[in-house]
Image 1 (cartoon, rainbow, N blue to C red):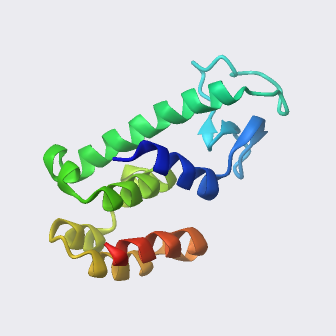
Image 2 (cartoon, one colour; image 1 turned 45 degrees about the horizontal axis):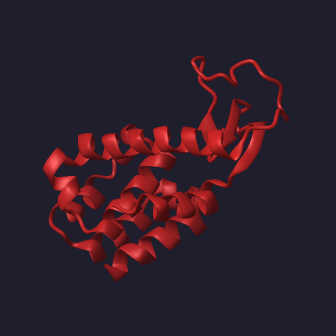
Image 3 (cartoon, helix red, strand yellow; image 1 turned 90 degrees about the horizontal axis):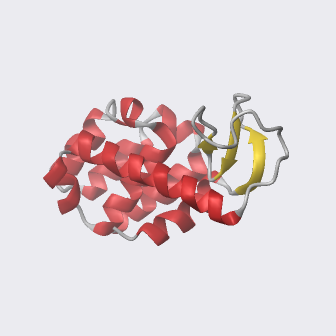
Length: 148
């Protein structure tokens, strides 16, 4: 999977901030939607504290590894790797946004993926609360899914 393409997509979808900020739920966050963890060096630092581009990338790579691992867990180690690169990128983007618990509830979407029916997967992706919550992002992803 093209990790750099996913990074560029998520910078658009999640935004990228080179300082500590509060997310929409009030949690300290940095970079490309990275929730500051207790184990992070940034834990306890004030909102507005600058974060280097290198550190943002380091946190993103760890978060991306986690999203990919969660895709393998949800879709199966071999199955996810057999999806076209574009589908893998879309699913990692969705996983990054929702997490495995929420994405696993997309029963008809996931069934269409397992059948390799990308057009139906796009229809089912649009038929969700997620789509209504992040319509612009979701529509971009579902248009890409249809084009596979």
